[in-house]
Each structure stands twice: as structure tokens, then as C-alpha cells.
Length: 359
Length: 215
Ligand code: HEM
Ligand code: HEM
Ligand code: SF4
Ligand code: SF4
Image 1 (cartoon, helix red, strand yellow):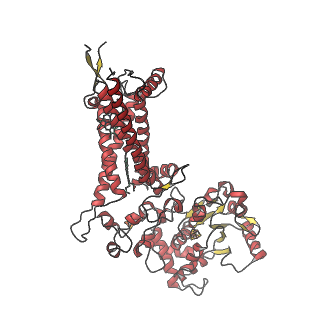
Image 2 (image 1 turned 135 degrees about the horizontal axis):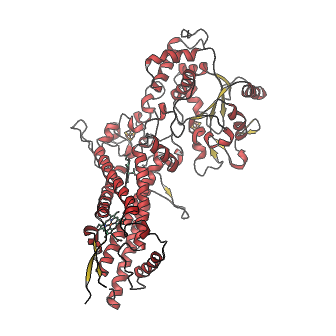
Image 3 (image 1 turned 90 degrees about the vertical axis):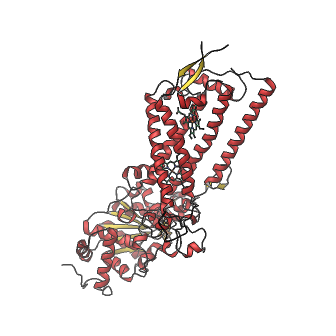
């Protein structure tokens, strides 16, 4: 029988919080409420999966949002259903002892690997080192032995801010290192930071059904990244009916109209933010008046910026200048029109001088 | 006194393709600009619903299906059309076609007055039509990837060939400019040829017939 009165788990996590966390995850997964007892049972069994959590090039924002949100129950639930054998931010061990724990788990136990942060490739990977080893070396040692890899955050999934042009350290996501990862399945939970519910849902799905959830072609779980923000947004009616914010702080902004014209990237972004929301207070960026920045998509620092424009600018090769798509288009059109004009004038001039020689 | 005779040139299917293609592009570019920057605001909240953005997108998608059907027709004609319509007639691979390419270049740059007589497209025009055909395939790929991102086929190829939705959107927008620029060049050289050579070039796209000197 599942320990839903919580005798073995964290004493601070009460039954109510425990059930609430499982129910939120079930809702995010799109499971019927008849499945909740199964999730609860799976979460409460004694056999807690071992998790190794590696930090590479990152800001620890993903860990912060997971553990220090206004979800104490959620954070405790996550820490209780998994056995976190190695996590630089929260583990008690330090120095050699910590590295010993890591080795012990890698060599002797099945485990899930969670990676936070990008892995730099340039110059032999020297731009990120832990305990004297490069991130690439550590990944190469740990990843092939893991039963699954969860890349948490956009950095570990696609490179994130470190990989933004000109990408000085050659940063890339875990899935860009197939030679180091081997055949271990990878699941990306991008976001800057991602919603803790998406992480919890993935773990609970794994515990309950003993397999990873269905993924899209970028290895993101479909339960969380299967729909566009724009197709779930509460301001969509304003979009459809042509009521747009023209400028931050204008009357339309105060009335809560659609943020498309001030650069909202909801139409190009897959995530569950409008449905799951954040921080236990039911908010997400658009609900508080700021457009989506597309943080769950690859290369978002390069392609979703400028954040307040519809389309990214285009770098003109050789000229070194950066222009918008329409500026470029209009210029080429102007040159074409001028060329056509010159061609016509030359033709007319020639005819005036030489007379009509055509057949 | 030279006499001219009618020669059948463009099948009804090719003319159908042309006007489906040209008209749908006018609609697609117009609605495309609107989708990029919707200016018609309906500021009366709570009035009778008038989903203007949805309608404009809907028109874009109807035109997109017309456009895609036209491209399918052209693909069929490249393989099974009459002699002027087949792709081999405009590929610079045969001696006859290469000769036409050079003589057209000289003719268009006012160096030579000689007009290489042929019933179908000249090679320079043919090259722009081929580029336009591939640009059209690109618009279909990026467009359907944006329209049906959840469908496995479009998702797979869209991610492999284009990347994220945002990248697809940028390239979709950039390649639109090719169609606008092509239209200017196209209509200019049609007019230029129509003035210089009495073969009835422009009307051939309505009637399917060109007028050639009787030999
Ligand atoms: C020559 C042909 C076409 C032109 C010139 C054109 C032009 C455009 C432009 C300028 C945009 C706005 C992009 C932006 O935000 O800047 C757009 C959006 C779009 N186009 Fe096209 N397009 C063409 C063909 C197609 C085709 C064949 C499809 C296939 C279904 C398609 C589907 C779409 C979709 C789904 C959007 C996004 C609409 C939205 O999210 O609201 N387009 N198009
Ligand atoms: C004023 C309107 C137009 C007229 C009178 C017109 C007429 C013609 C004519 C006479 C040809 C045959 C030319 C030749 O033999 O080289 C042609 C071909 C073609 N036109 Fe247009 N055109 C018009 C607008 C457009 C537009 C707006 C587009 C698309 C942007 C377009 C796309 C094409 C293409 C792709 C072909 C090649 C047909 C083929 O694949 O065989 N046309 N047009
Ligand atoms: S994805 Fe964002 S929040 Fe997470 S580590 Fe990278 S920069 Fe920080
Ligand atoms: S605010 Fe953004 S996500 Fe919401 S309807 Fe407007 S464009 Fe779409």
C-alpha cells in the first residue's frame, strides 16, 4: 500500500502537499484522475531512483526554480521521490568525498542523469572544468552508464545563452554530443528556467510507467511541449479580433490586449506555460503583460531577439551590417527597379540613335 | 511583306497554372505583410465578433492551397507537358539551350540585335522560372511547417531543414521578397519583348498561341 500518510518520507511533507504535487503532475501529464493513485503509489515506494545531477556552464537558475520556488511541497516531493546522490548545489558532501559518491553511483548502481548547463567544445573543452576534469570528460564518463538523461533547461538542451553568437566557448547541448552519450536516451526539458512541474511529470511518468514519456522531434516531452503558447493563450481572442498592444504602457496594454506587435513569440514557441503557470500564484509572462521570449526553443538568444520585434535581424555577410528582413527586401527591390529603369532608358536611347533594327 | 502564322505553345493546363500561381502570390504577399504587422485594429471590445486577423490568415491559407496545387500542376508539366513545357527545354544542358543562353544574354544587354527564334521560354527567363519553382517549394515546406507543426511529417522535415518555428518564419518572410523582385523583372522583360518582337508574348499566356514568321 502506498505510504500516502507519509511515514517514511520527509516529515515536513504532509499528506496534503504530497497528493497536491502528484495531482499537479498528473494534470500536466494529461492523465485522468483515476491514474493519480498509481502515481502516488509509484512516488511513495521505497525504491527511490538514484539521480546524479551535473552542473556545467549554467547560472543555477534551473535548480533555483526547482527547489526554491514558492512550492516547498513540490521541491520536497521531488527530493523525496528521487535519491539525489550527487548535486553540487545541495549535497552535503564536499571535495573528494563528493567525487567518491559520484564514482560509487556511476560504477555500482542504475541511475538517472540530470544535466544542467551547456558543455563547451572549443579548445578541448577547457572552458568548464570540475575537479580538474572538463565537462566533456565528465559527461563521457557518466552519460553512457545512465539509464536515461534529462537535460534540464535550455542550456543543457540546446546550448542556451552560452551558445549565443559568437559562441566563444563552442557551447552546445547534451544531445549535440552523441559520441560521448552513446545510446542513452535523452529527454530535453528546455526553458529558462523550465517549469518544475514538467520535470516532476517526467520523473513520475518514468516511475509509474517504467518508460520515458512520448517526445517530439527535439526530444521534448509532448505532454509539456506539444502545443504552441499562442494556441493556449488567454489573450488569443484579442489577437483574432485585431486588438493589439502597440507600445508598452499604452491604453491597449492596460486593457490586456495581445502582445504580438510588441514581439510576443508565443506563435513560435512550444511550452505549457499558459496551462501550468508558475510559482503557485497562477502567473506566466503574458498574464502579467510581457510577451513570451521563446525560451524553450533552440537558439532562442539568436533567433527570438530582438525580443520586442517580430522577426530576428539578418546579418549581411561581408558588409558586417545587421538589418531587418524588410529593410533588406526593400533595398534589393530598389536596386532591381533602378536596374530595370536603366535598362529601359538604354534601350530607348539606342533606338533613338540607331533606329529600330529588331525583326 | 512577312507573314505570320499561329503556333500552339502553352496548353490550357499551363495557363491555368500560371494564373493560379500569379494571383495566389499577389494574395499571399498582401496577406503575408498583414500577418507580419496587423494594422487594422478592432478596438471595440465586446462588440459583435469580427475576427479580422483570423480572416486574413484564413485567406492566406486558401491562397496557399491554390498556390500549392499550382506548383503540383507545374511539376506534372515539367515531366509530362508539351515540348515547350518540359523541364529539359529550359535547362542549360543541351547545345541548343546553351546557344540560346548566350544569344539571349547578348540580346538583353543590347550588344546584338539578333533574336534566337524559339517557341518556348528563352533560357534566361527559364532560369528565373526554375529559381521561382524551388522558391515555391520552399514556401510550401516552411508554410505547412508553420501551419501544421504538430503533424509528424511536417515537424520532422521542418526541424531538420529549417529549425524552430521562428527560423521557418524568418526564411518564409525573406523568400517572399524573391517573388516580389521576380514579378518586377518578369513583367518588365515581358513588356520589353512584347514591344520588340511581334510574337504576341503577353497574350500567349491567355490564348496559348504565339505568332511566328512563316518560313
Ligand atoms: C509565395 C508564397 C507565399 C508568400 C509570399 C507568403 C508570405 C507570408 C508572410 C510574409 C508571412 C508572415 C511572416 C511574418 O510573420 O513575417 C506568412 C506567414 C505564414 N504563411 Fe505564408 N506565404 C506564402 C506561401 C505560403 C504557403 C504555401 C503556406 C502553406 C500553408 C503558407 C503558410 C503560412 C503560415 C502558416 C504563416 C503563419 C501565419 C500565422 O502564424 O499567423 N504560406 N506568409
Ligand atoms: C501582369 C501579369 C503577368 C503577365 C501578363 C504574365 C505573362 C506571362 C507570360 C507571357 C509568360 C511566358 C513568358 C515566356 O515565355 O518566357 C509567363 C511565364 C511565367 N510567369 Fe507570368 N505573367 C504575369 C505575372 C506573373 C506573376 C505575378 C508571377 C509570379 C510571381 C508570374 C510567374 C510566371 C512564371 C513562374 C512563368 C513561367 C511559366 C512556366 O513555368 O512555364 N507571372 N508569364
Ligand atoms: S536554462 Fe536558463 S535558467 Fe537554466 S541554467 Fe541556463 S541560463 Fe540558467
Ligand atoms: S499575447 Fe502572444 S501568445 Fe498570446 S495571443 Fe498574443 S501573440 Fe499569441
